[in-house]
Length: 170
Image 1 (cartoon, rainbow, N blue to C red):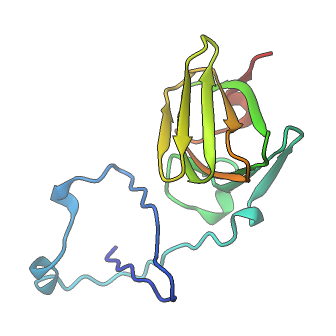
Image 2: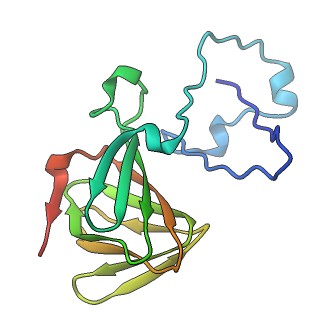
């Protein structure tokens, strides 16, 4: 699908792009290449509006998680993806207890604030706003708000997250 992205407001536009299958220069068409194409499509983009309109998972640890896109849990939208996307807000002091996602990786992108990701063996990684942490499949970690304000995070789980994949540790 051909697309164009532009800011229509008075502030700078910041956005993330997630592409599946992975992007390669060989699949991109731009500039003069567009002029020779007569591509028409009936497809339209799907807009996921306010993140808080997804499936809410209210955790009693100062964290609210909202599933935005998940081909397993939200199959009525028929988004042809294999990964899931969730939005989380962690209050100051909020945390997600030690867990691991069996068979799926997790990319945690920090929109605002700071996230401290720690493993069972004591290794810790501070992830500031605008950065991401990659969590390999099955790695047990805790995620904690390291800021004095609300930390906002996007989580991309591949393949898609389901409750059965989550293993909790005490």
